[in-house]
Length: 377
Ligand code: ADP
Ligand code: MG
Image (tube, rainbow, N blue to C red; front, top):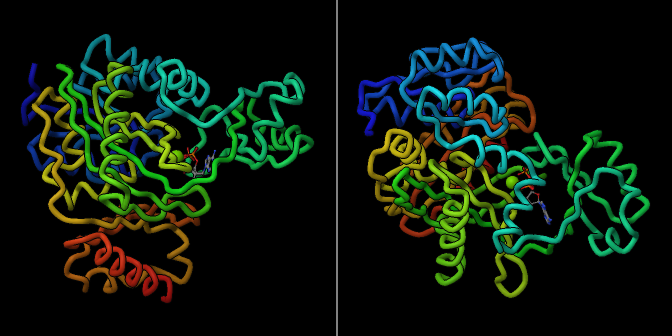
């Protein structure tokens, strides 16, 4: 059944993704309640109602279900049990099973491998000494990643020699890790897709992503790759959503390796940082698509009307005080987005800006110029 404007929607998690979901939903006339353990959070600053509670607080989840007709999540580490509890009373998208796969690197890789998606070679590490030497050596040099709660390159250690594995495992101090072979990357790309309850599916254009220290720095859209490769990435992303029987917005991150081979890196059961450009550059944004899938509305067109380059504004930029926003504001094709986070720590995503253009080279040049000017202050 369609949930129409005027209804109260719920969101689990109070970060910037929730905040941008609120903006899309409120524009359409919905009201929003957010549940987050922190009293002051970027989503709560613009939501209609806030519940400050842990994600596994059954009474608080009950209050959220009392208040909302349909509930989504912006944070991928919501306990699956909480999503199940809510789904007994309300429409919840994405579903607990999809989220529990996407939030656990071991389940995620097994799901991808078992469904025939190409991924980087890996081994599950629970006891570094359990594995035959050959199993480990063919994954070196590699990256050891914690199975849960890693993000923005956190919870990862490079392992260059067999002897380093035990130390890296001890340093990560997480019982279950994944050792993944280090892949020589030509590029990184990602595709956001939205899938409705009736199986209708729409993909956004492919984003080309540049990371710094494991954190997304710049997304260039459309990606500078051959059209056939872009279509293949979109088709794979749609197939991942279909195999999960997914409802909601999903992002699939890819590595492009030698000879334009595509490997799925990871999946996120929510809108994604690399899809923020869609707010300013597409007919429908990834956040409006999240509202539409949650409310059983038809999906919006995802056509991109302007080339776009999105740049993250990280906490480092605040080291000499508030950055000079005039640098962005005086550019007539740039869109500034700030998340109202009060504590500008290094490595923290504080906002982003998107530069629009007639082609990506023009937008990229302008974006890099703005980025340099911001860093100079
Ligand atoms: P996170 O959850 O932190 O985004 P990822 O697994 O996506 O974790 O890793 C973050 C970044 O680190 C990737 O976008 C990529 O730049 C780099 N990286 C991760 N795994 C590999 C790999 N196997 N080979 C080469 N680079 C990698
Ligand atoms: Mg990633």
